[in-house]
Length: 120
Length: 120
DNA sequence: GTTACTGTAGTAATACAATAATACAGTTAG
DNA sequence: CTAACTGTATTATTGTATTACTACAGTAAC
Image (cartoon, rainbow over all chains, first blue to last red; front, side, top):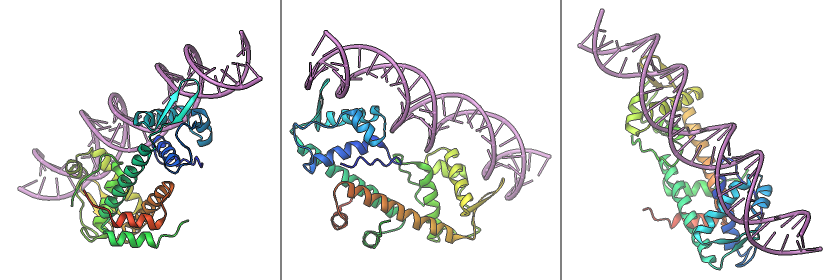
């Protein structure tokens, strides 16, 4: 997995999203152990504290659970991770469309811009 | 103009964007006076300080200029406002596409989601 | 049992955006 | 001239995210 973090955006949600993608895509499966808080922190070049916060959030949503002193593990409810992702995609799309409309663009124009988009 | 501010996002850039849209769309024209810092602050329900900051940023980019004690005015260079908007649209589209790709979606899937998007 | 890992918890420091309140100086209209 | 509006500037405070550091307790392997 690529633990690439965009430091211009909030880090904690990015970690949550990355874990959910790994679970939804089958990259990691129920019962499997996650990388430790300190490992992820090192890979993503962030503070263990921030990773811990993200893990706790996912735990509260039922996506993962912890065994004290042992590690973090993927829960059986991979459907939750998928739901979170779907919801995330919908929310971010809504935000994007709203912003584009505040710039005076309608849906057709937006799609046209995306189709013609060249990646740098 | 609708001075609707999304308080979940940073306010200062939203004010800058709104002014640029007003200029690019011809809603306000070169030489015309803008609403005062205090007026905008009241309409948008934010602090005059924040509006001031946004105006100064636009001034540094050459979009507007101030006459002390009198007010803020639209500069002749409406092309700058248009450029800023184009750049903004491109940047936000790039961010959106990058995020969607980190969720495992390709361009075709993204367009499909947008086409089927229902506004709430 | 010791060692090295793990989760867990807390504090302090930093950075940033925004708020709040105030004051000063220039302008414009009456 | 005066009053009411402007822009401008400063300071203090809040809220949030993140970092940095430290400490404690449970687990697992040797």
